[in-house]
Image 1 (cartoon, rainbow, N blue to C red):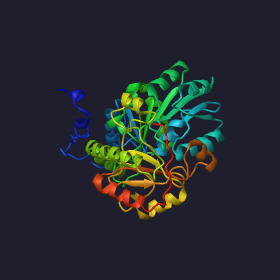
Image 2: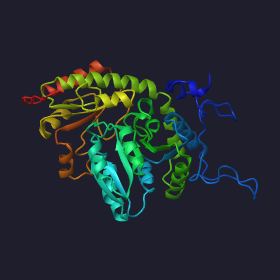
Image 3: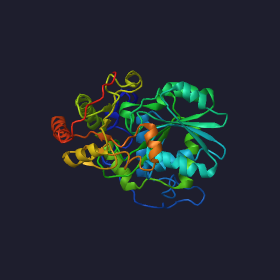
Image 4: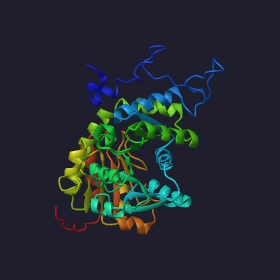
Length: 394
C-alpha cells in the first residue's frame, strides 16, 4: 500500500516530515539558522539564506502541498501575508473579481493597497454565477473566492467559477481557511491557488500566526516562490514547527468541532431570540446542496443574528464558555463580533450592504462538551429581552 492510497487522516501523521532521516527523531528539527555554510565555491547547497529556504519551513510546505493535492506549498508569516503575496501576481491595469462578503483584511488589501498600484476590483455575489460572468472584463486576471464565506457562510460553486475563469483566461484563488483540506480540496476542482490562515484550524491552538499557499501548476508555483523570496514575509521556524504539530490532530479536532457546530446550529435556529442562523450544515441554508457536493462537511464555524447591538452586548456579557475574541479554529470556542473585529476594516455602509449587521455574531466551535455549550448559550439568551422572531420561509 503506497502513501497515495492512505486516507487523509493517516497522511496527517505519515508524511515526509514523519522522521528526521539524519537522527531518526520523530519530531521535525527546528533549524534556527539564518544562513548556511557552503562547502564548495563552485556549487552551493540546497539552502543558503533562511528567507529563501529553511528545512523546518520546507517540511511544513511539503506537508500542506501533499494534503491539498498540490505540487508546491509556501509558508508565510500570516494569512494576510500569503494572500497579499498571491495578489502580487497581478500587474497595473489588471482587474480582480472578489466575493462580496470577504474577510475584512482581504477587503482592506484590495481596496486600500491594490488600488494604489492601479489594480481594479469588483465585489460580486459569488453564489450567483450569472452575476460573476457579467462582471468579468477583458482585463480580469483573478477571481477570488471564499467558500464558505466569512462571516455569512455563503457557499460558492467552485467548479462553476473555475469554468468561468478558464473560459476567460483568469486565475482562481480560494481562501480555504474555514474548511481546510480535511473537508475541502479546491485544487481537485481546478482552483489555481489555495490560501490559508494557518493561524486557525490547521494549527488549532491560538498560539501561532501563519499563512499558507498551495498550487498544482509547477510554473505558477515557481512564480509564487519568486514573489515569496522577493517580498520576504516568510514563516519563522518555531511557528512552522507549531503548525506541523497542530496538523497531526486536525482530523480529530475538526471532526468533534463540526459535530458540535451542527448541534449548536440546530439549537440556535430554533431559539425564539435568534433571528437567523448561517451554517451550510443546515438543510435550509441556500448553499446546502452545493456544500455537500464539493466538500466533505460544513465545517465548525457558524454565524447567527440577534435583534440588535444591545442584544449582542447582553449575550456577550452573559455567555461563559467561549472566549470573546478575534480569530477562529481553536480548541476553545471563540465568539466574535464581525462589525468590530474581523470586518472592522470594512466601512459600516459596506458591511450593511453585505448583511453584516450590528446584530451578527460569529462562533467558531471548539472542543468543549456540546451540551455544556448549548446550556451556556441558552442561559445567556434568556437574559435578552423578548423580541418576536420574524417568520422566515425555509
